[in-house]
Image (cartoon, rainbow, N blue to C red; front, side, top):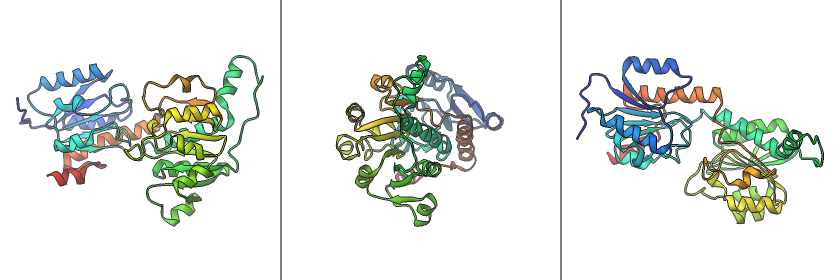
Length: 342
């Protein structure tokens, strides 16, 4: 059955409820009809979306989801087809490797993300994991919790004077660079496009090729998006070129680093220690990383602080509101592609 929206009020499907942007939600609810699906796992969320869409003869004008979607991703035809026809999808998160934007474009729908909102929180997590790797905090904490105090602990390392090699100098990479300067680190970076000289000077960062970065860095800092070009960007060949005892920090996407190659490098000592907030098969983590004292792990939690989620929720709802008012969200991802197919 073709659904036609003849309702005087536009309609929104919300996958989840905001925790902080309550005033913004109330504003949307005063202007539009908002239906909610409370997400759980993939199967139940998929069924709930299909059920609520089947109960109404009118289509949704827009659909949004917020954060904490690991258990029901990806956002694709399989999950969202019942919502069609829908003019716009809005998601929480800067990255959209878990969103089938091409499918949305093909079906005439805009997609908007929340760039910039996770910058500070993710950069903070990155610095935390870098210090944890350098100072060997996983082993030290376990020793202390086992009431063995400093028994058997070696002396660990310091950030002072280390070469920090940043791969990906977008918003988060730049914030990491700013924070790392406090620790008197020498900063080199590689990016798809070199930054303007003025920004390089402000950051105290030197542009180098990826190969030179890999060879020179003491701490490898991964901050680039996951694309077909960056999938397993760091693998066996790259680790072989690194200094012995290098440190690795990744708060971007797990699949940018070949996890098998990383495990081998940790076992051999080529990589001294690592700090990881992201993994290739989230939420399932290779037991090696969970059990190794050489690795400090976090559950992809860099962007999950109160301030970060509050900003992200507000931008998701602002994208919806702006689209319904003007036809264009604040942060569209596929606007030019959609224009091209139309």
